[in-house]
Length: 136
Picture 1 (tube, rainbow, N blue to C red):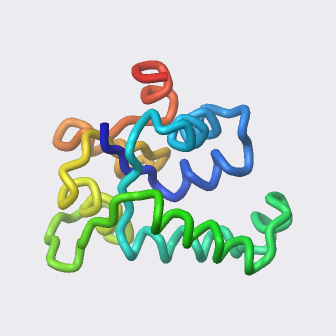
Picture 2: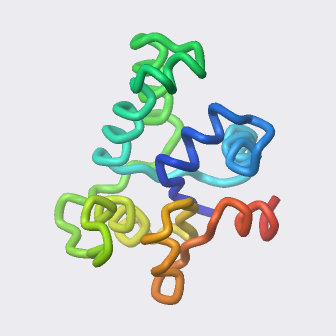
Picture 3: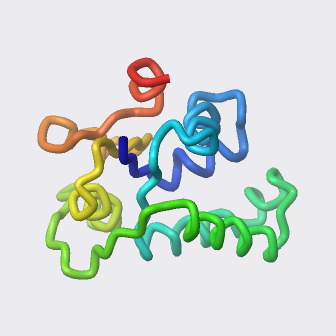
């Protein structure tokens, strides 16, 4: 199974390992699904992990953030979204997240973002709770 994790799910999972997003991140680490990312998604993950509040919570410095993003490059499938034209009408800043799902032909996008969840009738989008209930 190929899965795209929105930044909010991945970061929440790293910060709160006992939470539903944490269970999802642990399942990825255990090889229960293949994680799919894109360059814009990697850039957003790196930016968010470097936020002072998040970095403090994780106990990570800039080098650890860089190492984690490098790990993602090697342990994930990279989708090229540069030519994608999919749109998130309510939030164009999320276009690249949806594009990662569509271009890679992943099975699921897991997100806590209401704008993306609102597109579940058109695309395979699940909340973290739905993903855990269905697959973990």
